[in-house]
Image 1 (tube, one colour):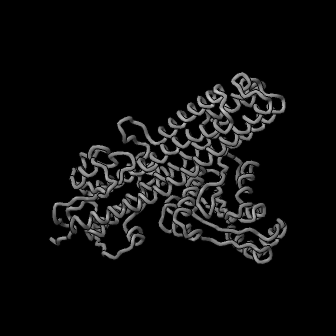
Image 2 (cartoon, rainbow, N blue to C red; image 1 turned 30 degrees about the vertical axis):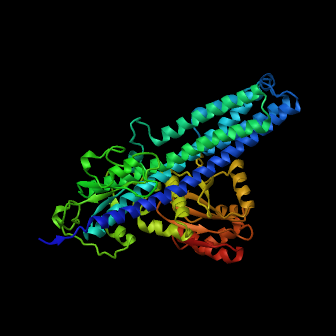
Image 3 (tube, helix red, strand yellow; image 1 turned 135 degrees about the vertical axis):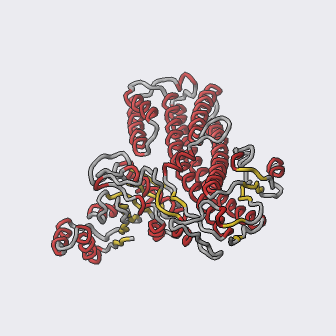
Amino acid sequence: MEKVSRGNKDYWHKRFEQLEDEQYRRSAAYYQDVQEQFRRASNDIQMDIGRWYQRLADNNDISLAGAKRLLKKNDLEEFHWTVEQYIKAGEENAVDQRWMKQLENASAQHHISYLDAMKLQIQQHAELFSTEYEGGMTDFLHKSYADNYYRSAYEIAKGTGVGNNLVRLDDKRIDMVIRKPWAQDGAVFSDRIWSNKQKLVNTLHTELSQNIIRGASPQKAIDGLARTMDVSRSQAGRLVMTESAAIASAAKQDCLKELGVEQYEIVATLDSHTSEICRDMDGKVFAQKDYEVGVTAPPFHPNCRTTTAPYFDDEFTAEDQRAARGEDGKTHYVPADMKYREWEKKFVGREAEESPRKATNGSYGVKWPRIQSPEYRESLEKLSNDPKVVDAIETRARWALSNRDGSKTEEIYAVSLETGKEIARIADQKTEYGIHRSEAFTKKLSAVDQDGEQILLIHNHPRGLPPSISDINVLLENKNATGITVGHDGSLYRYTRPQKEIPKTDFLVALRKYSQYTETTNIEKALDELSSEYGFRIEKL
């Protein structure tokens, strides 16, 4: 029987330490994103409270009694207008419906105090931020799990020389992992986000009232609120690093179990910052059945940098590895220089049978095997050289496709092509084959557009057709915008801003010239003909 070398401990330590370093860098980058979100929310709160304080000061009544007085007619009108804007923002960002109900109640009130108005604005900023935070965290953990799972399998394949046929991960499976409690308190990351949000809101509300009672100056009050936000910001940072470490560890464990690797070894990052518990755990070997986060597996503490590596006693035969044989019954070997993308194409197969996205839903069902293929990702990589930006685009494309699978309706996301950050979204409309751009959506795009930031608009096309004339013409509203359509059939079209509006009649005339072709080809040829005259580009990715 042919022997296949497993390499040595140093090899496995080195490769899996590198995986941990890559994961840590990604987590640190996302940590900075969350910090920036907090800074924006904090600045918004400070500005709003500053304006309310100024109104009290103008009335020479910065006191609790003054703060509890009812808003004047003009102030009340402005408050109602602001609440209506909040409601729109909440609808577009899928804010918790309980809070939306409170907003609707506030909108209907004709009597509200200055203090209540201040508290409501504080909570609104916290709700919007927490919604954005949870969505971003979910996306990040999904990607972290998949990356660590596949990369672990790839490194094992290269180290052993044996290829392993893997079922492609589906979103349902990943979601079950990231929603599974791993800590002793039984809470998951979303629970912690919303629990921390409520604690923050309660603390800010208490501090606001206390500052008014003490007669604190506006600046002193604002500085106090900012310090409280800074504490909460630090907690959010720790949550990012700890949760991502736990998910990365779970991905490695699940991968090793799938490949029949029965033992793993603790590998600590040894430097001056290494904790005592991680130093003590370094080098210890455990069976897969004994895996327990915080006890026999990392993270052992917040901001833990310790990882795991597969542990092999000595050498093994190809037949020892349960997942090594392909469907043809043969063992497939992996050369040491095989690139990750090559390995993925060869050994990561179709979706799992239990995947909820395997089947299509009528004429508008999403072809998930195409969407989840490496080729689809490679097509999206043509949009940016920054993997972080591509990740953001891919995530929004999947969201739109998942939400509208089997439906004739559409949704749209706007992301920065420079940072990957989401700018705005419309995900709650039910109009067939179209999207009505709300005032709030348009304002957000305009604000970013005026700063010269490049914007990408992402929306789904249920029938997989190329962009419509309306899709292209709407780019005229934003000088730095481009767009892509993500078809339910797996098609991808990129289009740019025209130099002038394209008349619908010109488009219809062009269509008639190519009526002998299929509908898709007909539209492609018509748009291609118009592109030179009206100064835009269209490309099928």
